[in-house]
Amino acid sequence: MAVKFLVTLPDPPPVVTDEITDTLHDGWENASNVWNHRGYFNANVAPVGNLGGSSWGSFHFDSILYNRNTNLESAIWSPYIMFVNGGGGTGRIRAQLIDDAALPDNSSNKPSGMTLTDNYVDMPLSTLSSVGLKEYEIKDVINEVIRRPGWVNGNAINIIVEDNSSGANKYSSIAMIDQANSNGTPLRIVGD
Image (cartoon, rainbow, N blue to C red):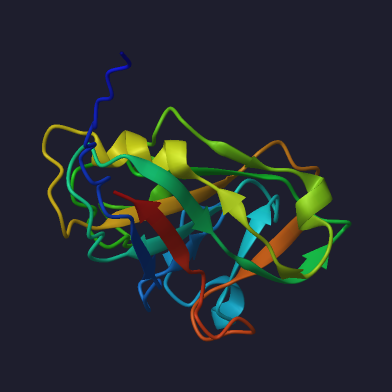
């Protein structure tokens, strides 16, 4: 006689998708360590690469609505490359390694002085040599921040793009808020 068992599995946790757009608090720090919330020449662009030396782009995201240790399925960051100089630069995407990121500024919270995540995502020349919308999976970068002991739902994150050994005057400019990409540089996070 065959015995049948009915096993009831718990419902899987709900999948939450959240799109956070950056704010007017984006900026760019040049090789002389001057941060400007309006970017290069007040043009609302953040060059990635080498523009008279290494530079940093900073992209601030308020209210990341995930709890500590959330299991992220993906975190897609979508910058728009407005223009390319000298064939383009190369970059590296990290985040400020802090529980609740304050707005970048030109004094105590410049990207060049921030402690950054160990995890990073390279932005190779193959993606930065042409204009248009790009997508980078930065889940490991975001996970490193939201798994910190002091992280709470609603904290902010600063994504930092740094030069990654670009040649002299080779750079690609990311549009900051309200440029060709109407949403600035959105971050789409999927987790449970």
